[in-house]
Length: 378
Image (cartoon, rainbow, N blue to C red; front, side, top):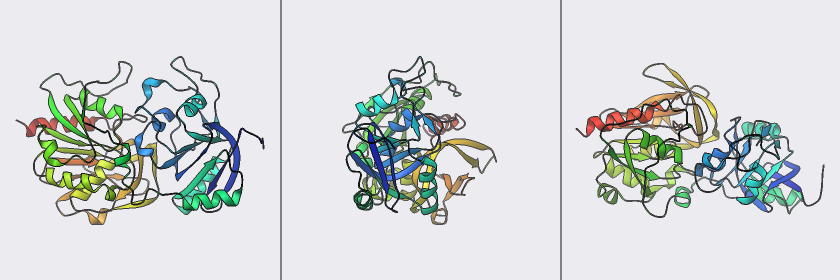
């Protein structure tokens, strides 16, 4: 194994210790280790605020071969605590690239490690469940790093949405880029007003809402219901985000006040917050869902869609109240992937229909949201 200033080490709280090569920024970083099974889309993953508090491990063995293109960024910075890959391409091979992945990691302050057995690390997490880890370019002592991993904060009980949300409300008017392969018809009739709660919102979610006919105002995660209603919206959107949904109490309170008043659509953390406001419970999963290839069945139609997912918590099916119906089921582990209220214009899904990265199977949900809001606002 190569040693010297380009070395790096990773340790897990179960005692696992591996040596590899530093890629990206120098230093030390820790968090919950999660593995992502997507073969591409690493730039979108690295700029997804939902990864705040987590160390991302890519299971595909070669990452970075097409470099990074800034137009693919889902936010204006990197959010994972650190990055792990088997091999990272040092030079991009795409005409779209504005730089290499190692250069981008260094520029954005992301500590990374490559040259380690990512299959071994993935299997440890699958077998044991969520594990905290630490990656360092400065400490090569196994005992010291394992101890640091065991002391690292996990995502349990943490309101990380407050860490990633916007500071002030803002408007968003940009639709899909011309090169985006959308399957959605563009809405050309009456524009509807949508307030989007930012728990870690991604740009392609905002583009999807605009494309489907919404004028979007984004508000911070802690915005009270009264302030939201003062904007006179036709609809509420609850975004994705990181951390423990049960800890995002200001948002749960706000959604509880909004339920009887206005149509609501939530995804990912927004889905969990909505179900908590409806009276259900959430729990941390053994190792979560992180990737672009998760099969989900629509229980009304029987249709199976391949979905993009990134979450470590899930809604407990047995806790759903009688007035809430489960609409979507994960076919890998039978967890709740979607719900709707039986009488109110309220629904949500656990996965990411904005498909950045990921398949386009579920983008139709934005059109469904538009149709329900239009019907409710007549």
